[in-house]
Image 1: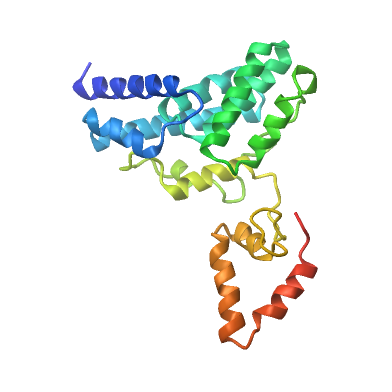
Image 2: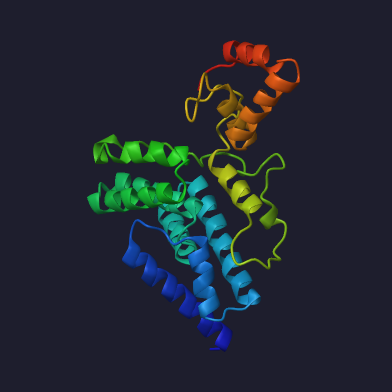
Length: 252
C-alpha cells in the first residue's frame, strides 16, 4: 500500500473515530480540513476522497429511486463515512433505515433512522424533508408510511438539472463547493414546486421580505434594506409595493 493510500485510510479512520465519539455533533468542514492537513493529505488525495463520496451519494440516490433500500443504505453509509457532515447523505441514510424498519418491523432500524435524521438537522436546520421524516419516525413503527420523495419514473436531474459534478470529474477542493452542495440539495426538493409566497419564518411584519428572500435563496436582511432604501430615497415607492404584495402573495 502506497503512502498516499495509507494517508487516506488514516484520514477516514480518524474522521470515523472522532464522529463516533461526538455522536450527534457532526464534524465541521474546518475540522475535517484540519485532520487532512495534520495527516499530510495532498490535493490529489482530497480529490480522490471527494469523488468517491460523490459516487456513493449518486448510487444511493439511484437505489432509493427504485426503492432498493438495503443497497441505498449501504451506499449512503459509505458516503457518510467520507463526509460525516453531509446533510444529503445523512438524510438519505435516515430515509433508507425508515423503509427497512417498516419492511422488517424492526425497532433497532427505526432508532437508527431517528439517529441519522437528528444528525441531518444538526448539519442543516433548514432541511424541511428531515423535519417531516422526524415527525413520522416519532409516531413509531405503526406510523411509518411508504412515501418516497425520490420515487420517479425519470432521473432526478431531468430537464437540464443534472448536477455539474456529474459532467466534470476534475476537482481540486477538499470539500464540495457551495454551488455543488446547492445542486445536490435540489435533488431532495425536486418534487416540490417553487413559488413566491409570504414566509412564516423570520418574519417582521407580514413575511413579504423573508418570502422573497427564500424564493431567491438570499438573506432576508438584504431585501429589507432594499425596501427601506426605496421608502426613504425613491419617493416611498416600496411602501405601497409592500402593502400590495402582502395582500396578493399567498402565505406558506
